Image (tube, rainbow, N blue to C red):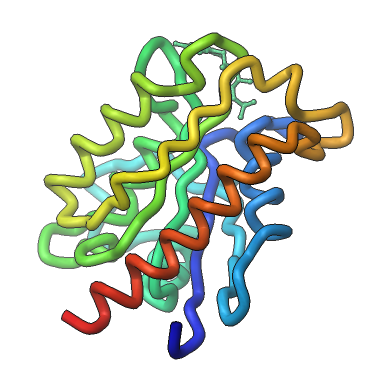
Length: 186
Ligand SMILES: Cc1cc2nc3c(=O)[nH]c(=O)nc-3n(C[C@H](O)[C@H](O)[C@H](O)COP(=O)(O)O)c2cc1C
């Protein structure tokens, strides 16, 4: 692999002890050489209001600038009511507007998710992939990282303790780096 790659990661949960924040932190520990992961906290992003989209507040501007500065994105996607969380959907809406100023367009993206259920955010991840089509993002197809029964794999300090989960997260960031290089070459 040639050239440094910067990844921007964000989790669609505001919860302090979020399992999705935990898997993002694990990704930061499992990066291949020449890959940097910056984590953006979605706390403080306003609810999207189309009346105000031409004058985005500072947090929205900061988010869009961080996306644009990154070579690729890594999204930790919780599952709420069989879909993506409102926090994550709102973040995508904020980053994609106003029309013609979609910061997400053309970005390689890897998706992962952790849930306390047995399907590990599978349903939410496929909904997220649907939005990626309209947003003109380039999602990595695999490996799929769907962390089921997260409470058994992440400890009270937010450390991912399950070796298999750590291995898959490591594979995901490695594959995202290779995917980003491939797209760079056109
Ligand atoms: C409003 C709400 C809806 C939820 N719906 C689902 C669901 O559809 N599937 C699932 O596996 N877990 C569901 N959960 C449980 C989440 O997996 C769990 O709260 C998880 O910890 C959320 O991610 P976080 O730890 O990153 O905050 C739901 C939780 C909430 C608060």
